[in-house]
Length: 243
Image 1: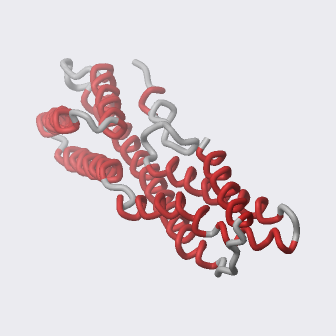
Image 2: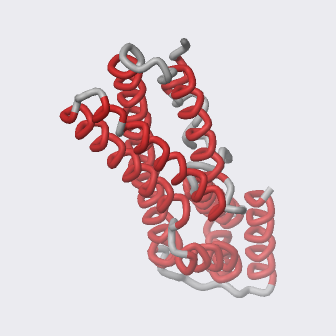
């Protein structure tokens, strides 16, 4: 819809400039400097954040699976009160909380408090390795827990801090103004070939709006609005384990 609206605005402005003989030659590179470059820069930064988020979510899953194996294989056989299924269910609830925290900004402080309570409980469960005389294993699982917390914090910051709002506002302003600003330039092409100015105006509109749409879709890799967003359900590795 936005593509159609901007395309119509661009064609209408081109027609009016041609009708009133308001034509001139303008540097086409100005479109690249004013609109295309900021959009491409934002898209590149967004894809880099997405790749970092994928990497850290993979690390988060890997550490949780390692902790699950450690508790199942080393503790469950020695401690009767240690239930691997309960540990798995607790971890699944934690991953669900992480997913909600990254996708929903409301009540984030309360949700983060619950998440850190999970880390506290997990740290307390790791202390059982000391009770059965496995200090080296305790040091290992504590390291995994530290890396899990680190990955969660990186994901949280990616969710909270994205492309600067000023840069996004700047791109949107010029995206909406360029059909009017460059209408005299587009109208000048009609003098060389009939209807060519309208075609060029619509093509410019199509390219810039598509770039803007791509940037918006990859801006937040957690909101499930873009084709390339992270799928928390399919990427939840601990779901494949059952006891």
